[in-house]
Length: 221
Image 1 (tube, rainbow, N blue to C red):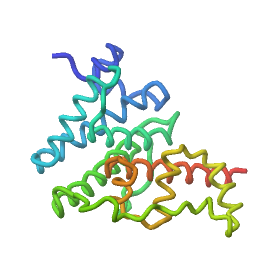
Image 2 (image 1 turned 90 degrees about the horizontal axis):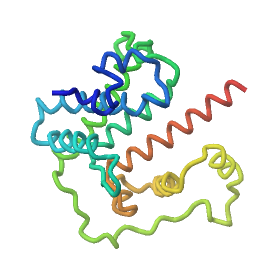
Image 3 (image 1 turned 90 degrees about the vertical axis):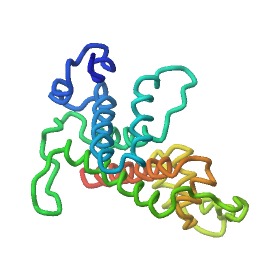
């Protein structure tokens, strides 16, 4: 049976070892992130099959059909997106390069750090499910309409406007940020914007990454 990485790369890589032997680039970061997310889900599934199997099966389905027109990706692909965004910060480097030290003072690679980032989000998801397996708002109208802080003419938000301009946030990211500034809970943001809780996490991650990248440019200028 042809390996999934071989199928998705259209024969370019015979195995994952060949894929991860290359430096991270625009051409391979998507596939790298997908393979790391798949492995993370696969490993956790053996301990929590009931919860994680749906995400794993969804991600496998996504990888096989995502190129099809009008295909709707599943929640499982959120973890691939997280891994892709994480790796993209290190474009030009190898996943085997040192990322830094973990909490125990042990050096870890970029690949390990990426895997742990995915695993951490999986842990949050599993805890949410364990606490409340199906979240339903009794009445969506109970959620107050978010106040648009950036439209408040009584306040001077020149600095905030300048920061947002430099961050180059998308419209969806800006909507999410505005909800966060209104101190809305993650579940409330998901209901308000019509996305999943994982979608909220992904958007917040992208905002943090853009902000961190902007900070780094300030330090180097």
